[in-house]
Amino acid sequence: MHASVLNSLSAISPDPWNRLAGANPFLRHEFLAALERSGCVGDETGWRPCHVVVHADGVGRGPLLGAVPLYLKYHSYGEYVFDWSWADACTRSGRAYYPKLVAAVPFTPATGRRLLIANGVDRAGVEQQLLAGAREVADCYDVSSLHWLFHTAEETQPLAVDGALARVGCQFHWSNPGYRDFDDFLGTFKSDKRNSIRRERRRVREAGVQIEVLPGTAISSAQWDTFNRFYRATIRAHGGIPYLTREFFHALGQTMPEHVQLIVARQRRDDVAMALCLRDGDTLYGRYWGGRSDIRDLHFETCYYTPIEYCIAQGIMRYEAGAQGEHKLARGFAPVQTHSSHWLRDSRLRRAVADFLVQEQHHVGYYMDELNEHSPFRRAGAPPDNR
Image 1: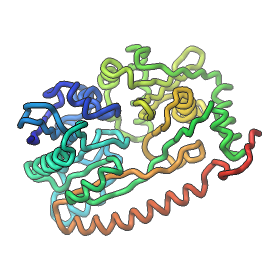
Image 2 (image 1 turned 30 degrees about the vertical axis):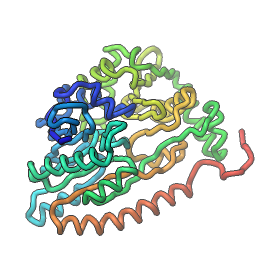
Image 3 (image 1 turned 90 degrees about the vertical axis):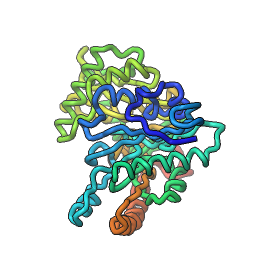
Image 4 (image 1 turned 90 degrees about the horizontal axis):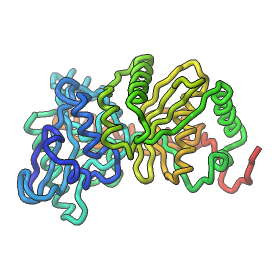
């Protein structure tokens, strides 16, 4: 059993990688390889793939036992776990912060395993090989740091044993305890919050907008092109960077349509907005949207209410609508903790970051407590209120 490095996922076939990735759509070979083939990641974009893999019988031989999606980075864009202040402190002290390594799914702030390990193997042994392999890559490129982003809570402990500092963040997720329909969901809200959501949905209907949820198999090439135009225009209108390309979206539709859902909003037969979601067995992930800004509340309908309605109808238990967004709280999303871990080579920087993370964790906990105090839901045990 030995770790080696892949500079492209094209060097390995999809089936063995996907047996490690499981149902999570962002970890699947098709998703990560599409990022590479479409030019979204690579040397030109500052995301150089250097995936760590462990085979049973040595380098490239025998069954694939484990993997880590790993990238050499020359900046901190597209990560959603912010370390700009760390980079600035390192630079001011006369040391280079870049390059660094990130174990992550590029441009995707969705929780998932980062230590991908096959079933029925010596997990501790494979885990040790993966961690050692990642550190060997760190030494090879003499990076300042190695960052594990949006990993599972269970992975915090082995990463800490390997010397990484634990960090927590906050996102907003929707959960489904078994709602019968959208009205059943609304019945759990305080009356003012429930009426606000009904007004927002009514405004969209009164604007003559109709919504359709298209599975990946039903999305045409022209619709992917329209979505790409919406996505790029919306990102640029908000001063962001459109990390993904037309070729990437088309690749999703071609290679993993069973994981894709496209929410299409039409007004008088014209497409006016689209939202892209991916799903696995029990989770829907809201990823990107774009559309006209002159239709009031259209964003809430396409990105929140229609996906929630879809989840209820499909029996999906959780909806992750992406990073940030306190406005999600009033629409039925709850704050949840996210996790990352950070190994830093420089001992002085490590001590400073460790102190910062202790304070940050306290503030994140306080922030989540405050958010929960403003929950839109009726208190437990309160009688139904269907006004």
